[in-house]
Image 1 (cartoon, rainbow, N blue to C red):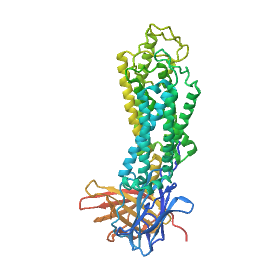
Image 2 (image 1 turned 180 degrees about the vertical axis):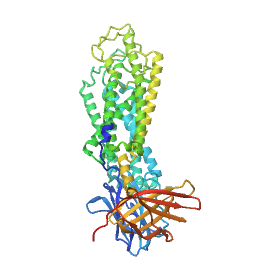
Image 3 (image 1 turned 60 degrees about the vertical axis):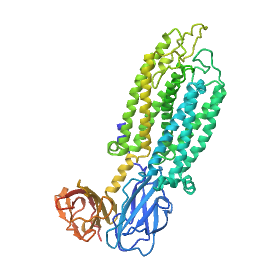
Image 4 (image 1 turned 30 degrees about the vertical axis):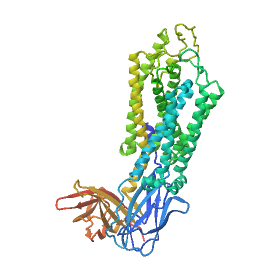
Length: 626
């Protein structure tokens, strides 16, 4: 894993604002005709994606935002005529190609900087009521998908006779309903989630129609159609498998020793089920992180396999847990079915590990992002929970091995419904023995020459131990699913690193603009200084600085001092001798004698005793020859 991450390069996923025209902090002599934002990838815009606010907080852009010709990553809006002078705020909110909304704001000035009543948005794009509900709906949809696919696969492949068990039928129908309702809710909430509106605004038919025209909306619409087909599939599965006869011997059905069914109708159901499950996973993979960035043709099928393996493992475990707690008149789950689920679970674990390593490499990009970004920290937490799940599975394997050995040693097959087994990894090699199992007393002996074991009752003490480990596995699995849902809505680590680099220093030809945050730990002592150095080259430069308070408004302070030091050459500190211009600070002449990476020291004093100094590196380019 270290080798993979250490050699990973950078690639775009969540869109990042790469530049703008006018640039952040630029001071213009006259108003521009249009304002243009350029992102690192294609974005989707709505009517309210761009807002340009004058110093009084009034909106001065007109018409709908639009993409520049042939540039899906470039967004423009037109300014109306006769705009005033002063500092303008550009607030933007767009949807990146991986379906997540992003937002931000910057300022530019016409004439001279001034105070402004326009506030810079502080919450993240998804931190709204609609965004939080959308996150809950995404988790419920994942849960419904896992239970639906896992329960159906458990019945089709592991225990066809289980189709007649009411608890399993109830689990499949309930999970189908949960997935359908959550998908409809996501379709309604998608509009306000993108635009930042109230949840109720999603009920507007025009909003729903607009959502269906986007890639995430198309994926949700396709999922609804597939779920309608899946409903018919569940009915056909129940009717077809109920016609498969069961042997008189308890726990012994006519299913063949291998996993592939002999009956044509059963085989058709298995093939159709696999196709439906893959199609459902595509509705997630084609609209989220896997659909953008590097290696998209490989990333999408990998994401599909990862999601499908998770559903087979976790959903199948839940189905087995419910089946083993069935009513007293049900026969016990046969050990043969448990053995088949063991093989499926083992293959799922292998698939999850392989696809998980690839996705981690693709989304993190570097080892530093593992600890330095939210995505990396959530991924680390998920890894710890997975290790806990595997530890619980080790005990389940131990109790299962004892159950199989006990079933071979008992001379009588008891018809006990509470045989409780959780098999995750490594049982099938024991279950594949050719030893035959004695038949119940009073019946002719039944010789089982196939590789599948039969069934016997578990001792009460063993049953209780199995019940505890299975319950632990299910609880940890629910937590892992919640963390996985959070990861799908979290900006990938490499995109976060790229965005931080963009925010730390935005370089435009002729202008060096730097944002310097400060926090003195006192009330009202948090904000940022926006420093603009023009032209950012050797020789004379002009410097302007605007101080923003924690709420995004212009702040006034009694003193602001900025000096420059070139440590490599032991030059400085050079004082810029700023002058308070009433709302901003500036100087017309800052002489920078040499090119290189200069350290800019920014000292902010907010009172007689509260003062803080922060630093930022500024690249000064050589003077251009005339």
